[in-house]
Image (spheres, rainbow, N blue to C red):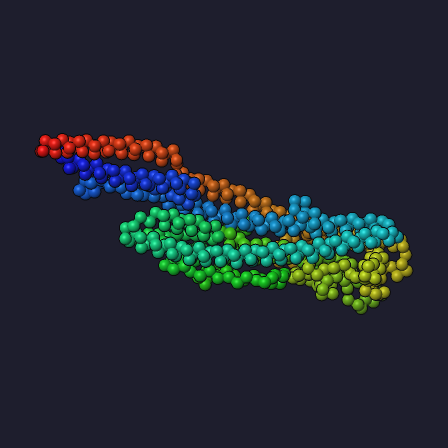
Length: 487
């Protein structure tokens, strides 16, 4: 080997070591960055035998696809669980102490006590107070359910805004990657950013990615709707100013196609957006239906009938009334009745009413009185009030639970429905979170930076650098000797 050849080899080695050291330094400085993919500086040989350094990302596309899929399902399940937990909290949490089932059971017990001592005016007031608590409980629960829907709707609006921003950033980033790839530029940093954007998008909506020539990429939802192809597609949604039992929320449109809600407690949704729609449009409205059916049942159960020999007057609301002021006919949900149910003012002492009408009847006039003489020992009507709460009645099948049961049983079944769905959602959330953790851990094991490994490589490069430096020093000494002889 000539001295010139040896010098060129040593200089090339030093240049390669500098590139490799720069890559390792970048790895070490990003060791704590979860969106950074480790770079490997690989020595390559050209066709003429010269060595160079190729920088490669430690990527595993199969694991990356699995990790973003698991991220989507875990995000959807966690969002659904949070929504169901919010609905559970409306009814008092773990013990459901403010649920209609508990409040009605308490009222029934008080009515039974009053029936045993119908002459006790204090017990009449206590029974009416419990009835007021039931009505207020239904009012507040109905209001809270609509609040859950409203909050979910606002969250949908925020998620849509964020999704549009992420897609716009994705478009800019993807264009940089494509143009950089065409010119031979190192686009590793841009690829890291694109992967990070995909992760963020996948937590909002399920993503399927298709990589095309030149590192170009297209994005589709799990249902096949185009999110990005050359340009970002618009995601459109109009938030609602408020909700009631009779109002529905607006749809989310992606590229003009409506986004479907997730289905089931173990949700089919991918990303938080579909689960938010599911809470707003499925679970909260179904719970509202339960409340409305309970309220309708109470108005019917405590209705007064004409007690004259030839009934001519229609049944009228008794202990409980509502904004419609009538006794509902047929087993059909009346949207929003739970929000307007109240105790009949004719029974409220502070409103000038007579609490004893609960015992005697006649809230709607003498024709409806069961105890026209006002006998203090009269208990037949109170006994009937207690019994009616345990007697079967018809409920609308649209409520999703029993179509024939007592009011108390229906209210208890409503709790069972909610708890079953929340429990299933919780189990699914734990399973999907574990799957997400395992897939991200597996991906991290391949792409993350190990400080120990990087330092070990750095030490090897240091030794190689010293060898090249010694070679240059030896060549320098030989050249100095040759120049000295020439002089």
